[in-house]
Image (cartoon, rainbow, N blue to C red; front, side, top):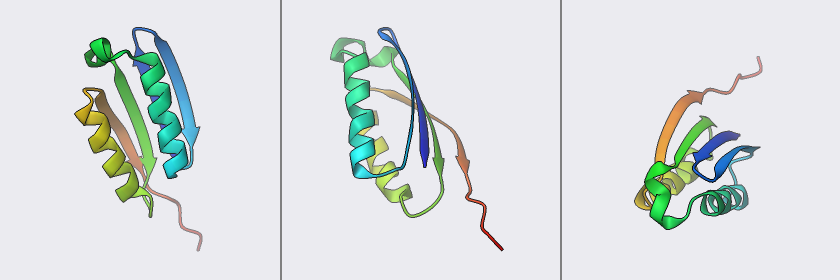
Length: 84
């Protein structure tokens, strides 16, 4: 599971989803819609991610976001509660 809050000059958006390739691409599209290339340094992505098998996928995605100039702040990494 991931939760994201995008803050940009064009508005803000809260997005929650599973951490699948489809959902990460949807989040990327929302980022593109909210931030033209010339204003990327004014965009912040706050991200909360549960630990688990999707972590490497999210990490690779974040590297791509950083490369575009989006400021990324991981607010916390939640651990899943394991059933006893």
